[in-house]
Amino acid sequence: NKIFLKESKMRLGADPEVFLQDLDGKLISALGRIGGSKFEPKQLDNYPKGYTVQEDNVAIEFGIPPAKTQSGFVNSIRKVMQGGLSIVDPQQLRFSNLSAAVFPKEELQHPLAFQFGCEPDFDVWAMKENDKPEPPVPEFRCAGGHVHMETQEDPIKMGRACDLFMAIPSMLMDKHGGERRQFYGKPGAIRFKPYGLEYRVLSNFWVFEKKYIDWVWRTAHRAEQFVKAGHEVPDAVPDIILSNKASLASHMVKEYNLDVCL
Image (tube, rainbow, N blue to C red):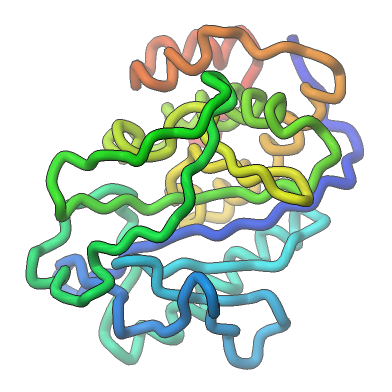
């Protein structure tokens, strides 16, 4: 079952979300502090076209142009996050590494703090649109690390393969992923795109370290090679992801020689 990474022309983009915190670690809403929106992302000054930031509810969301090489993908993620830091540093704010959190009520007073404009995503296992998530409390927020894949392969098969090659290993890597996955980033969550798909299962855990950004590139391309080779993803994969049990994930990692970056 070992899949060897061959040459691929697939390009990767991403639009990760990150929470802000003050110097004492208190979560701070990005609303009114960053600029930009879903409909009008803010182009970063002195950056090439496509490097953007915007306010996405209480989080800051980044955008990068599609990358055709692993080094290009890594550099783009690191570059756009540095651009974001240049905006928040003067405000004495930092990035939080949380992907799920309950925000202080005083940080949710902005009129947009309870507006969620995202269209539904699609479940490639149930073959239907996902229902709107119902968080445990109104102040609960999540931050995703969505990956955009420019590929000619079937997005349904790609979404399932990404669950195997990306979501399963992430269960052993992402410290806060289980809490987020109870409500957002369910197994097989994708959006169909003209160029391929947006894979929406991963949290933002991978954007903070180079080794994890490298891992996203490698595993996305391994998933594509798996699909190209005509392999099928085991039906047990979504249940393993939902179980949040490391022991089940570890077994699948061994069986399929999956890439875990610790």
